[in-house]
Image (tube, rainbow, N blue to C red; front, side, top):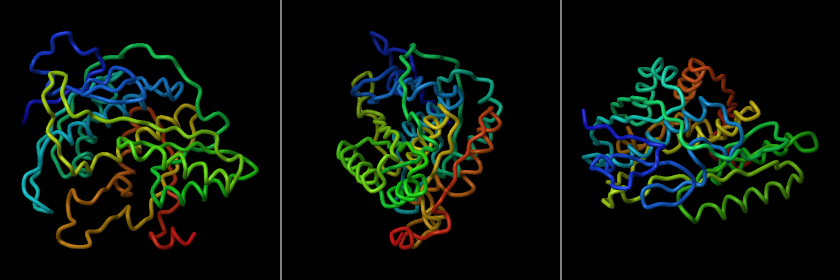
Length: 306
């Protein structure tokens, strides 16, 4: 097993040691060479987020950061099975220790690798608590892609005149936020008064470590939508709302269309088995989550026709 990575919510040491090259420092809002985020590790910008959801976001952030930092060998579908170890700062260790084996297995299903998880208790600095998604009756994942756009339209059409929804977007590239905002505004223009809030989350591991060395850059990043899901669940947890996950059913199953689209080239984050696994794990740590998948019986073409 390789030396573990660490997601730390502590400040960067004045004189970082060699361990900093395997540490992802997320200790507040800001843009640094090693980490950029417009939310702190206690998610105060979302409101009073449930503690287990805070932990889940931290775990998902650590997974994606490590996933991006360990190179695969081989090409196309002939990639190796990596061995990745991470330690994560959480608010409470005991709940996550109790589901460690299940979570490791679920991550293996997601990325095709072997995962080793460890947790340490570290709360992080206090954060101001914002008020978001006021008046929303549901939260909708909204990447800005076709399925999420259809999902937002369906949700707004269903709620028009009776209730509102909040959209949650995640981005790491600068070109996405204007597109996401424009589509959210257009949806609200078609169904006025249905948008309670649009929460756009900028969150990504940087290019350099706190020591100034470069992280390795792996491009497959099959775990990135796990973080998107975790952010959506965190926003939904504030007022115990359901989270809509708009993804067409064919993409959720994601069968390989050719021999070169197997394994980690095909994402599984909305696969029914994965979503069930997340639901079961969250229930065991004390969080009942509800996430309808309104497009699960549709193909991409049918979604577009809607």
